[in-house]
Figure (cartoon, rainbow, N blue to C red):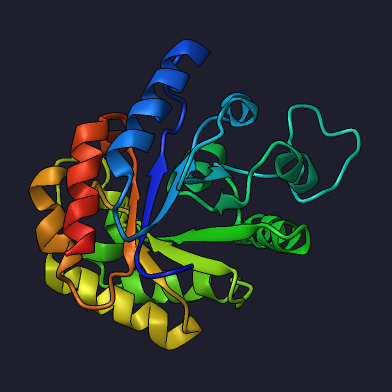
Length: 232
């Protein structure tokens, strides 16, 4: 992992393989030359279709067993076999929509590392925790499950600032990123609704080692601008 990291999480988008191929090709061209580690996390079904120059591929989730009677799940070895080198675990949507626990997230991370994948391990607090002043306590508990390894990067996602119209301040981000680094000593990405309009300000925050970008990564020209802000 050289320098700062620019990661695109497409979530459950785009709806067809034709659109995915077109979007990936446009992204590949626009990101060329940026001195960053560039990562793309498309839906599982598109991973075998994408072969990109200068962009590493990853999966948005993984299961913690190598094989077996686990309908609908995808193992780390399956991901490796179709070209993935990274995986995201513990994304706020997996935790808060699907209901994944810290123990499940830890098992997924360990299975991915065992298979030779690199991991983006997501942590972050909800609004009631932030308003009650429990944000550091909540994140510290999540961090206690992180397998500390040179192949793990933490992504801080303030859940209350994702798609809500609210934004974490640079001071709040700096506090949390410094706290995470003090606890686990790993690179920390910021993943709270990064867009072109706030990318330069966020990139200037101390201890921000890159971005995990959701919606804006579906707009390649905006994503390029975010990358430029990180590379400055």
